[in-house]
Image (cartoon, rainbow, N blue to C red; front, side, top):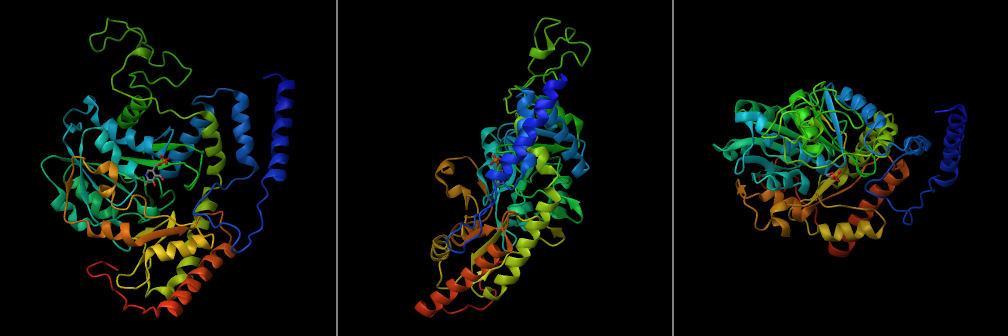
Length: 457
Ligand SMILES: Cc1ncc(COP(=O)(O)O)c(C=O)c1O
């Protein structure tokens, strides 16, 4: 870049910072008027500057910002490889699809093989199982962790079980110790969906560092954002190569975008029944996709990464404030609980209506939404009840009663770093107002604690 261009670039980036100051100053919070969202982008001038900087490179596809991000991100987990992709859903698709590679020999997943997962969760944790013609085996969850009921793992096992894929629900790690022991004992692949759990730890170690593969989402709702974006993590170089191949059209070549002949024998390969010397860049060893990310997205992520420690701290603080503020309503709501041994970087604050209370979830969420407090259900509830899953080929362990329970009675509110203490206090106040209003109008009876029969509360 010549000196004049460099100078102009500096000026542009300075102007971007000024633009940020003028255009993105947060509005004051007005209780009852301003929304209290469940999530959102939290950024400052740096994200805009990185975005513009990358656009001025005009490299467009995966490039220097993506490379930097991948290096920094893998280091966070003490893992060798982070492979960026265009969404968390793509990350899950890549993590599972790469295990179908013929290069894995006996360990390769074949159509009809069984993959253990839970029914209460996000669709694209399990869709790759179906998309790869594998069979999902659904087990139930427990409350109030909203994670897999590990006591069902043994009954889920069959001769065809080959892998386990589970998400750390709303940032709360699942019982990694039991699940990892089970996976090791039965020689199963383990995929951790960490899309909602960046920064959560289990026994002092980052989630994502336990499984063979782990996935992340950088959609705006998540702990850091690139707009759209995702990542696959692994410590195993052969898996990194497979993930990259599936991401990049299924190609055999591993050159970075814009590079050629890094293997030194680009025209000396003979693969498949291609002629000897066929260009390695155009040789395909997998039925792949193109799920690469652009460098503009990665640039935003790189700026976000510096804020991650603060984001995690803020999520934990907001969770604690809500927990303390709502604890006295425990006779109406089942309060969330961190999995023993974990320290969650919460994605949201889940609550469920205690069975038998005359208050319904519908009443609660309508009241909150009417007071500008956003709510969400626990993703797809019991996914097998969703229209898309009516005719899938699957196996179900037990009766999924707690998956049904969350589908009917659970919801969550936000804890994201963009919420101020005033907003959190407002949420607590409105919950109390709701209980007071309903008590007055319905003579609402508080229930005995532990009202959900059989649940681990
Ligand atoms: C647990 C889980 N997995 C996967 C995804 C998919 O991520 P994305 O929206 O980036 O495709 C989400 C999305 O929120 C999620 O919550």
